Figure 1 (cartoon, rainbow, N blue to C red):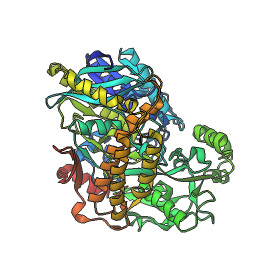
Figure 2: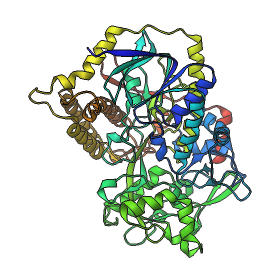
Figure 3: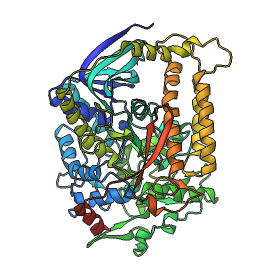
Length: 606
């Protein structure tokens, strides 16, 4: 059996994106020993791809903005399925987290009087996104890494976590292996924080990085945690569609925030054709100004391209399906038209959207200052994940915390752009603080070494079966899984197709049990893919079962066989939990009523 070593920490964090690093900073500042394990290299987590900005009601561009408006926008965007306490904490604390990040050295774009500049984004009533051009995630990670390293956090790069370890009902660490050498390591800890990001690699077309394979929610589920909102997968309206090698690569909402407009092949700005009922009494004065948007006694003007992401994605799909799409199966996104309004439009675009300019110039040979981009929906974000306590971020499993995209509750049925980065900061900080408190209040549990050896044996099985007839490599299985999820559990769903997906998932699980890999454990990407397959299959089943259970269309969940909202499901979460017999169980649970003072805010902002 493989030799393994043991590392001891008070708090173990799995994931090195914004949530993991922010959690590491606050836990370490609390005076406990912190270890951070990551599949990738430090600085390469998917947060680096976040472009548009951090949503926080600073009020620097429009002084009418405040936490109440941000709270109401988040709840409305989430179709009121949000955990209202998380939405309240997020709206109230996000401004301080942004200012804190600035104090740690993050360099934001500035207003003329030197304050942090903010831009418009979909679903937000006012310009609210603090940004660094279109490279906000990169700057955020840089500042957080500097802070974490200076606090003495121990970082273990290129480690894959296989399983969470428990002592009774409590999580007391994790088993992992070093991707470089293939050696196994037990991380023994008093508290564990999962901050592993998203699930995008479950789908064929995605903006997500290679490491977004649903590890965190899957690990938590198998350790006894509950998952919620798994049916809500956000398909970002604008990903690249050409050339094929970069299909799905994100085109930031910042393009639309800076004035980009959507047109079909006939040049028609189709987003004006389908403004939701909320805005039907607010007509556009002109295409440039957008419609008049009111909240209480407040007024602003919004282009229809900045409606919520689920709505914009469905409008784009409609244009493509009805034959009005672009040559390569998308629609046109045009920022170059602003030259009609700005004399220095070319330099303005290059200054505000430098990454987008270079991305299209290098990858598609398109100059976005002179011609439109071709874009289409791409799997982008999971609103669902580990169910956590709003204040502490602890799951129903003692000692197990979660933060960031792998945790659920804040975004409800649909996330607003920019809320992800402030989510990482607000709840990463809280997870770190409360995990540190849990570690101080509890002794280290006992590691079951027989259980560890059994987990190691299972992880090495693909090497043992290399000569077995009927075995296959992991890549074809993963490709088939991605294609099936894209086709049967994608943007628009129906019962018959999802039932077929469940059958397909079981067949794929059977193939995965016979997966084989060759070579040795050092630098073996086939082995890594085989390990990832287990997580992807678990998350695929959770999404499909939750989507079948929600028999309505709401937010990012759209069903052709149930196109309307079901009033009976307006305040219901679908909860996923592993049963005693190992099968996946679903149940419907009513969301607790919102306190009167928060309900009054929502009513006022309507």
